[in-house]
Length: 261
Figure 1: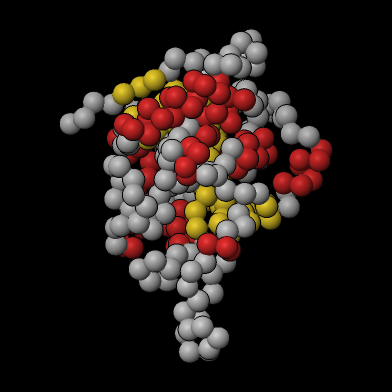
Figure 2 (figure 1 turned 90 degrees about the horizontal axis):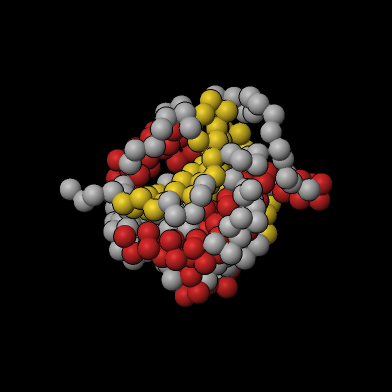
């Protein structure tokens, strides 16, 4: 069995190379999860099978969602970035199915943010062109499902760092900003820093602990550090674990001692 690796060179950041289902993280210790799990659309990851059957994918989703729930504080929250639907290998209602599974195992539903990534230009298929025979309807958006464990209102008061303008803009559940470049980051499915930045400022206090069970290139940990939160990130793949360390080191060592005093 592969030994779990842990990197914690920068204070308040811990990166773990291992399968999230098997890593040792204290129960009832996490304030906020911000994550984007694999979408099961055939992306070429190094260590994850992104071509499972849909039933297998939903079962895998249930397993990690159950583990995540155990780690949350009673007032813990999750921002879960998943597709609205998928059409590769057959149309599936991903958002509806995963949200239903999360509620079934104990997560409580709060709301959904629609992320307008603006990727309509990538379309290559319309089904039946200019015909009612079998047209495809594809929305150029993703979802960020907001879930919580037991109580939505935070049990203790803390320091909020969100501005008035940010609060007014971000509590409107339609967010428009661009995605991230795969080539620039060196990961097949990165999300932009803006996504965790908004989620962390809107749904957590300064000093809270943020978890990303699928850390990938390290974006959530970087955002958390810049916003004076503690972070734990997990990734099963050693290559992406090393990539995350490289990005976090570059972004956060510059800030070390400036934000955390």
